[in-house]
Length: 399
Ligand code: NIG
Ligand code: FE
Image (cartoon, rainbow, N blue to C red; front, side, top):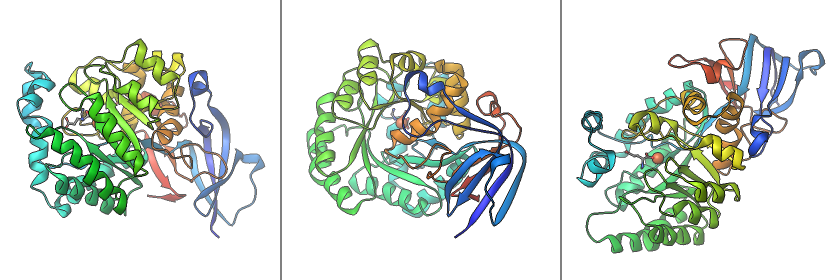
């Protein structure tokens, strides 16, 4: 048994465990002058330092704030090539959907990724995941979706699996953009071949679809979800990024883990999310990078939805390599309070991945936590462009 008592904690700040909605998202537990006992990688006790139990080993953090490790519930961290050309085109006024419809955008990342080996994909993604972890992400989700064909899709999943030896990752099969020809054959193949194969070999735990005018329809999404669920895979969705075409309502109805983006969501989509257990994941990096409207984070919380925040790290719509910055942007762009943003980036992000063993500093949870540089946790939602995270602990071990 290994046992470490962490002391020198000016403030220990956490949400309660489990998904939080409405006003509960703002209710943090704050313990001043705290201690944290870790036993075999799990939290055994938290409380005031004066009441701490004895432990075989001690670690003095030197008087700084401690928060749960952040969870990034939405990334596309594996890709090859770059999107510097379409970045320049977009800032000169060409819309993202126009670039995509013309064969650029996501389609250019697909071409570059198809040409890369698993080893090359791993080498390209590793520094991105290191940056995310240094920014506070102790768990991250990574999607496929830049595969030209099923083989390339599976190569991406293999790369994510390989990276999972170094990082805590969840892997999602993303059905991203339809081929320009034989679309019906493609969707049938996804349902009848790709999903059964992936479910049998288990390189992914969930299936995601990009449901949008320029990507998959609501009916195609429904068929893919039915196939995924029939094979025991969870489902999640990219929806309402540009147009609200009904994907959010479908996903809530089918018990999806999360619906992500939501920049174009209106009252019907907000009501569907609020009435469901499906997590509403907002991605403020996209708002910043594409100059899109912000997802209605404030309205979603006030309506009673479970709101999470992620980076959406990807080359085209959100080259955001910091989960702390995503949390900080959710306060500026989506109207979350600092406390709500912490909940969105911890327990609610865990729920968006179907995880209940992390995100909160309470007994029994994984000992994934962050020691900040300073004594006040609010540096985390406040800081822009510098890293307020000093140390990252995963399972009680400093990385
Ligand atoms: O979440 N919108 C669709 N998919 C990604 C973008 C991927 C890309 O542009 O390469 C997203 O924003
Ligand atoms: Fe995405």
